[in-house]
Length: 218
Image 1 (tube, rainbow, N blue to C red):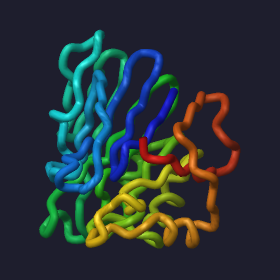
Image 2: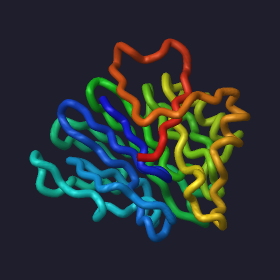
Image 3: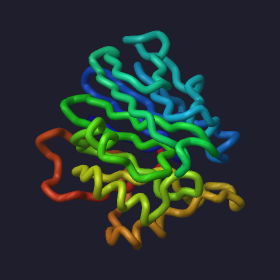
Image 4: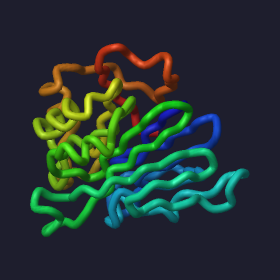
């Protein structure tokens, strides 16, 4: 599988049977450009314009229009399995910012979990539903999702093989953004890996101990 990062909380998974784009964004809202993307499946963690721009993603030769998943449940599309678990965009059961969907995707034998704009610790029931995770996409820059210490607690609870941070400000973000830069998280996490353009990974090449991977924005 090949994983590329497209800024904010947007990733593309490209596997043998198909591809998935997660949380495409409106570049006018986020303030950074979104590359041209195509996929068979698009997942939307919540209905905010910095996460729900499904119209930005085109179809493929296998599927004219992407299948859009924006509701909790179990899905099977073009050989790709997707499981959505309801969580919240705040710490008060969604009363302020609404709900959020944590998506787990099974592709090429790998289990990939995208937390969206999760803003609270996961309870035992939610952790049981999410289950084993090989690769975790983790929001780290807040302010309305997890920030440094809370993000680390969630990571330890899920215990993935690979952690990939997302939802942080890089040098191209507008200067008035409230999203925090990556460096704060890296310092607290205790790792500062060299950024990569993409991650190419197979099930039998997963690290034995948790590894942090930072991807450059494509």
